[in-house]
Structures are given as C-alpha cells and as structure tokens.
Amino acid sequence: MADMEIALDIQHLKKYFGGIKAVDGCTFQVPRGQISGLIGPNGAGKTTTFNLLTGVLEADSGEVIYNGENIVGLKPYEIFNRGISRTFQITRIYREMTVFENMLSASSMKMPVREARERAEQLMEFVTLTKLRGEYGGNLSYGQQKLLEFARALMTDPDLILLDEPAAGVNRTLLNNLLDHIHHLQEEQGKTILIVEHDMNVIMNHCEKVFVLDYGVKIAEGLPEDIQTNEDVIEAYFGHR
Amino acid sequence: MQEKAEIRSKYWLAVFLVAAYTIPFAVGIYTENVFFDLQWLADLTTVILNGIMQGGVYAMFAVGLTLIFGVMRIINVAHGELVMLGAYLTWMFFFYVGVDPLLALFITLPIAFIIGLLIQKLLLNAVVGGPELTPLLITFGMGLTIIHIVEAIFTTDYRTIPYAPDAFQLTETIAVSRSKIISFVMAAFISITVFIFLKIHRIGKAIRATAQNADVAMVCGINIFHIYMITSGLAAALAVAGGALVSIQFGFNPETGVLYTLQAFAIIVLGGRGHYIGALIGGVMLAVIESLISFMIPNGTAMVEIASYGMMVFVLLIRPRGLMGPKEN
Ligand SMILES: Nc1ncnc2c1ncn2[C@@H]1O[C@H](COP(=O)(O)OP(=O)(O)O)[C@@H](O)[C@H]1O
Ligand SMILES: [Mg+2]
Image (cartoon, rainbow over all chains, first blue to last red; front, side, top):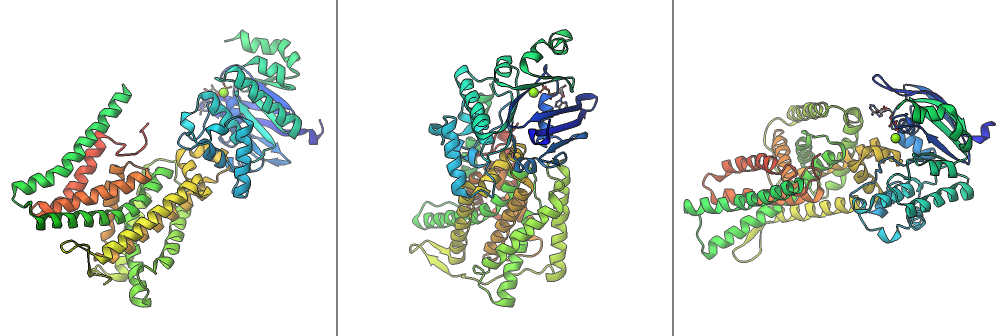
C-alpha cells in the first residue's frame, strides 16, 4: 500500500495493565478515505487501542504514524488538533451543559467564534438535534447522547474519526441515521473512519476492511466476507470463551 | 432510596439553617438584648444590611476558592494569603504612589492574574490529578512562605487604609458606611462579570467543560493545563480584589489571610464545593448570620467564629453537597 493511502500506521503497539496484556504488539494500517472496522470479542483490547490512538492512555511501546509523525506520547488535545477525533463506548458528553454548549466546547480556540457557532448549528441539523439545542446533555436519551457525541466529534472537521460502538444502545432509526451520516462523511468528504462495533450487520454491510483483535493481538484482517469465514476469527469468537 | 436520602438531607439542611437564623434571636430575647421598638428594628436592619454587604465581598473571594476546587479538585489553603497580599498591594499603591484603592484594581488585578498563572504553572500543574494531599501541602507551604515574606517586609504591624469612612444615611435611622457600599457594589460587579465570562465566553465554557470532565475536555481539543492556569489566574484575581475591598474597611496584617481562608472554606462548604452561585449565596448567608450573632448575643464576636466553623462541620455532616453543590460520587 502506498503511503498516501494509509491514514494511520500502527506499529507494534503495546499496553499492559499489570499482568493484563490489553494490547500486545498490534500492527495494522488503516486505509485512508475508507470506513474500516475493528472487531474482536469482549476484552480483546479495542477500546484500549482507541485510547492509545487518541492519547487518553500512553502506550508502553510502539508507534502510531499519522501524517508522517509518530503521535505516541502526545497529549490528547495535541492529537485532536492534528485531526483525530473520537467517540466513547459509553458516551461522555457534558451532562451539565446544553447541547449547543457541548458542541461549542469542542471547537478549536483558533476557529473564529462565528464560524464555530455556524458549524455547531449545521452539525446539530445534520444529526437532528437542533430542536434540543437548549436541553442539558444529561436530559437526553442515550441514543441522542450518542448523536451529540458524534456531532461534537465532527466540530473541527477531523480527517480521522474513531467511533467506539456507535450502535450500542441506539434504536434502529437512529442507527440508520448515524450510518447515513458516516457514509456521507466518507463519500462526500473523503474522511477516514474506524469503527469498533459488536453489531456484525454494521461491520459487514458498511466497512470496506476489517481488523480482528483477540487478546490484544491482531489475528486477521481483510474484506468483511473473508473475515466472516476466517477460521481464526470463528475460533476467537466461539472457540475459547 | 438514594433519592429519599437526598430529599431528607435537603430537608435537614433547611431545618438547620432556620435554626441557625433563629438562635441569635432566641438568645437575644433570653438575655434581654432584643427590644421590639423602632430603634431596635432600625438597628437590626442596619446589621442585616451590613451583613449582606460584607457577605458580598467574602462571597467574591470564596468564588475563587470554589473555582479552583471545581476545576482541579485542589483545595488551595493559600487562598487567604492572596487576599492578604491584595490588601498589601492596595496599601502600597495608596501610600507610595497615591493611587485610589479602587483605581488600583486596574493594576493589581492583572498582577494577581499573572501571579496565579505562575503558581499554577510552576507549582500545581505537575500535581493536579495526583494524590490529593500533595497539592494541599504545596499550597500550605506556599501560604506560610507568603506570610513570612510579607512579615519580613512589612512587620506584623496592622495597616489600614483610610477610605470613605463616613456613613451614608439610608433613612434617618439607618446608616451604612460608604466604604462598605462601595466594596459591595464592586464585589457584585466583579462576581457578575466573572459569572458571565464563565457562562458565555468560549474560555469560560472550556473552564466549565474541564471542571465537568477533564479527560473528555482533552479529547475535545482543550489544553487543560492552559485552562488550569487561567482558572488559577482568575482565582488569584478574585482573591486580590477581595483583599483590596477588605483593606478599605478593616485593618490587616500578614496573618489576617488565615482568617479569610477559613471564611472562604466555611462559605464554599455551605454553598456547595465547586458551585459558583452556591458560593455567592453561601457568602451572604454566612455573613448575615455572623452579624446577627454579634448583634444579639452578648460577647457575640467570640461566638461568631464558633458559629461559622460549627456551621461548616454541621453542613458537612448533614449534607456534604451544601446548598447547591454537585452530588458526591
Ligand atoms: N484502565 C484499565 N485498567 C486495567 N485493565 C484495563 C483497563 N482498561 C481495560 N482493561 C483491560 O484490558 C482488556 C481490554 O479491554 P478493552 O480494551 O476495554 O476491550 P474491548 O474494548 O475490546 O472490549 C480487558 O481485559 C480489560 O479488563
Ligand atoms: Mg470496548
């Protein structure tokens, strides 16, 4: 794969929690401008990987090359300002701020205030939260919180978007809505998206490439249809747990 | 279940506060310090007004303490020393340069902001989020250092600033000192300005975001260490403004800061730790109770401190969240 086509080059990434090898020397390349999936059984290290990629946790060792730069060791806001944005498996919005304030809180200080407001308005419209703009984050339903977190992650127009289980706890209509948005981002704006998801329908129908983790190690990667029939993957999901 | 306990604690706090306000009257009646004639009512009104004015100033610097706690979970026990420093700064500008104490705010507040910024950058940024004892001890040491430096320069003598000492006749029988009114108006103005800043300015929003969840703030691009510095700068400015406003009403020496720290503690416990409006309400409520006590209870001045710290302990027992603080988790 030519360098231009790789958005994120992850090399031997490692993170142990005491004796738990949460991420154990992972190496994979996320293709640029595509929707990719990161799957694996519970506890495989997917969320930890996201935390390492976004600087929420510091890696024990390994590299993450983004736009020619190793971003391991950077602070979360430094990584965010380089164009990587994320959502959390369990939504983390500001419960005591309004929807609109949640949106604005993710704007870069460099972005003019007027522009930030306009962008927040557009994104709220995009995820159909405009009529709830004055509502406190804590009063939203779980699905709405997911939408808000998703919209907030787009405030600074990031190039790489990491979504941790966007479908969990979201009803069908909202989910389809969300998936439409994700496709829109990829097709119209050329964004790179990496999704951690348990819902196999989402992975199989929406991802171009899938990476499979088990016990912190990448055990397979490829097209969704190939992954589905991969012996190792079936073993990981159904074999030993 | 939890909701019931929550409602019960609210109820008990209300009962406690009503009692706290009633007791001075009861003791006053019992000791025959209360006469329900017009003169006494006028005096009572004066005392309550004074309490409110005093409370406004205390509330303002208590807000600084509550801001730091809310954003960083740090208890800055040197906050009162910054108040004291503010008094000395104002005194210096008044006596050496001849600047009006209120106009001096234009110089002392930026100085204070920078001092706060530096304290944060050099001493506290490294220990935020770590074990809670470390920042506590650091600010404790810093407070003592400030006291001794000021003592070395100015000795322990009391200083005063003669400023607008004459009384303002509200009615024939009710008069409030002009310096108190000026202080209160300034304190209200500054508190409201800071509140609006926190509400609508994007840096204010970033401060609130960081207070709610620093980890999320970071992945949303907020450099929390800059936010911590701005918060400390603001808190120091509020303390120094408080110092300026008390310096025109009361004498002060290097050790008075300790009392202001304790006062601010009592206020933010009552108002709810980390809560802005809570601190403002708590400040006024506490000062009013204090003035009622010293007005109606014989030997009341000694009782005042027992009452405010006793109140702090009681509130912590009955309802640790105080009036408006966030739920403990
Ligand atoms: N902060 C942490 N401290 C200790 N162990 C952790 C921590 N975060 C995750 N783990 C452990 O690391 C492993 C991987 O967890 P995680 O990345 O959340 O898995 P996934 O998201 O794939 O379900 C699990 O065994 C989990 O218990
Ligand atoms: Mg997970």
